[in-house]
Every structure is written in structure tokens, then in C-alpha cells.
Length: 160
Ligand code: SF4
Image (cartoon, rainbow, N blue to C red; front, top):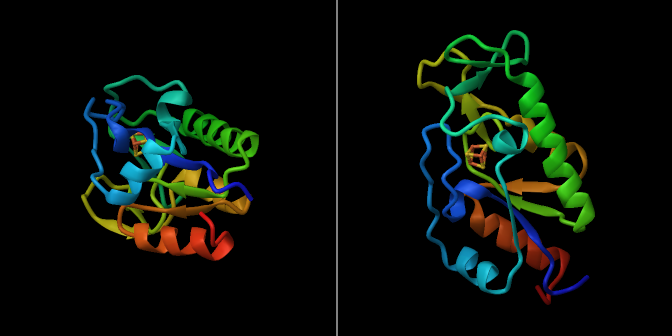
């Protein structure tokens, strides 16, 4: 395995203004800086790739139906699924096995998501993109588990 294996990363971590509110969510981290310098980061915003605009109404996954519904009650499941599929294709094209995605997002969350009621409550769960990547054996980590990502990469390839 090449020591320059690529890593999928949420675009909002690295300065792209793609969040629902038109903002970034910059992640300052020594490993992220290193991987950026090594040109290993493949950035994607699944929601924008799926065709949603910036800014856009916030959306959450309904725990009853699994659909993604905006706060204005529009079903955006199709756009979220399309974005997830495009993220997967990017990983497959570049042999990506690891992703660093924004926690709690309805696309990118890996440990938690919001509960579907716009109540600011988080529950255990995965976003739509994370779920699809994991189903395809791509390991997903977040800003809260970068050390685990580093360890997983080292374990799979000690030269990385
Ligand atoms: S979908 Fe993912 S990459 Fe896009 S703004 Fe939300 S957390 Fe960031």
C-alpha cells in the first residue's frame, strides 16, 4: 500500500463554505495539516454533491422512517443518498479506506446524529454517507476520533 494513501474528508473541515448555514467548520489538527501538505486529502460535501444549495435548511434523519427531512418539512432523502453514492464512488476510484467526517451531521456523523425532531438532542447513529461507506468497508472517523484514525492507518500500513 502506498504511503500516500488518500483520506476522504468533510469539505467543511478544510475551509469550504458548504454547511447548511453557509459556514465552514474548520478543523485545526496537526495530522490534518500534515495530510494536507502531503496532498492526501480528498474533500467532499455529500449534501452539495447531491444537489442541495448553500445555504440550505437544516435536515435531520427521521427515526421513524429513515427519511431525511428538512426543518421546513421537505424530503431530501434522494439528494442525501446521491451525495453518499458520489462519496463512495470517489473512495472506490482512489482506493480510499479511511474517512474523516464531521460528527453529528445527518450525512457525515459516525457516532452521533440529531434525533430527527430538531430538538438539539443527539442520539447514537450514523449519517447517510457514513452508513454507505461503512457498508463498503471504509472506516469512518470524526474530529473526536482522529487518534483512532491515525492508529487504524498505522495498523493497516506501518509506513503510513
Ligand atoms: S454534509 Fe458533511 S461535508 Fe457537507 S457541510 Fe455537512 S458535515 Fe460538512
